[in-house]
Length: 566
Image (cartoon, rainbow, N blue to C red; front, side):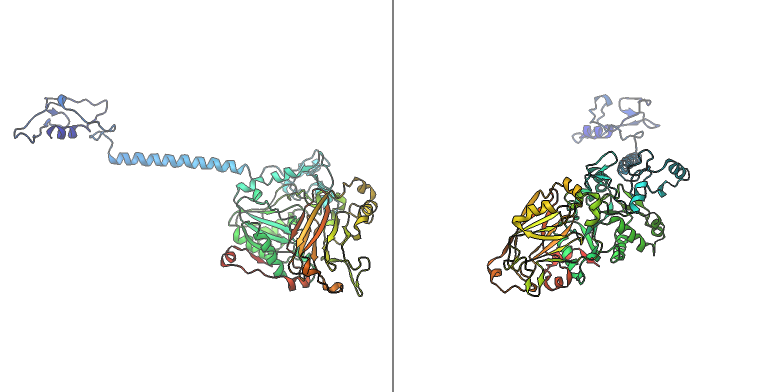
């Protein structure tokens, strides 16, 4: 026990190199001013036993020691604090370097861009987007006013000229002065890495074709405000409560993180105030990006949004002076356009439209593009046409069976098997003529009348370059209630066709066909890249409110279902 006690007392002792240990006698240490002998008692003997220091076995000592010259607890605490502070500084520097790398992905660059289309300004290529006269460029640069320049292409677009700048769209294969659709999409790739608020626009006339179902590839996990545009084009008497519910149902199936749905019109400013309030509520200092497919109406929406925000926000009022240009040409906007529209932090960005190869605008010549854009309220064109004596005499008692209907030169529908009183209603551009001929005469009729009666394409020259309706899609549409529309057949980039199994207004004699036949068969011919969608019918017009049925929701569905506003 004595040996153990002594070793415990001596083992932690350590000294710096410059200190010396002097031993006056075998049992005294020269540590204090007076030599102090070290002795202990053994439990087995009553007499004191003295041990020389050299014979003592010491236990392994702490490398820092615990003697008088060793670091105290306070010193060790300070060392730990200093190490923690140094670690914090290093972590802070690492975070700063990460932020710097992220900022490289942002669209904020030193390159001056046209405020109308976002194309980088240049003075070398006259026919390319972003061209500016060199004298004008130098003068504006001298006075730091490059952000107030409108390029030559935008000036022509503002005067109604149809100038395509995206290769593969508007009938052009592309060239030196063209920007590819992939290049435009690449300019949006940074969005998934940023914390932003996405305002996604969808055209109600081309809902499925303009929806951007893979929007997550661009927006990442950022929240989305869904804005449905051009609702003023819907037929007269439409109940927007039914339309709003229909849009939310279709959006819920996409499984997107949608905060709210807004039915709007940039022309009449309907619903714009609600979108402005939602943006101010949800942006929380983040940048706001207007996202959508080409020609969905982004620039027109931004113009309407700034007009409504200018009533309360002086920054938005100032931003109205330099608004993005508006045009019917797909690909008007060629780069992100920064707009200082908010006083409380964050920027508003108009982005290039996402060009979708499956829309009609990708195959139609640029001069024919205005035909595809409805300018006034839609009016459904019904086939067969009802008359006082029943159906129009062309079709007979068998209805549309055995006939083909041409929608301009862009769509052909072969009616293979329907009820005698089945009716098709076409909703789309008024300038697209509709013609019905027997199916066995359809091929010859198309070759003869393409570019004349069947337009677009307009003119025999463009018709000679037209590749025709290469894609044929067979459709089988099932229905339960013959008194309600069975489905819509939506043509991407054009409009939709509502199919009603039985229409009373045709005046056909009552039959029991609806009891035995529960499916309709069609063959739809379209240009090769264009897609065809079969969807639940959208409730438009006065009749839509009568047949539309609201679905009963569970409590969980009520919680996660986005609200819609009009």
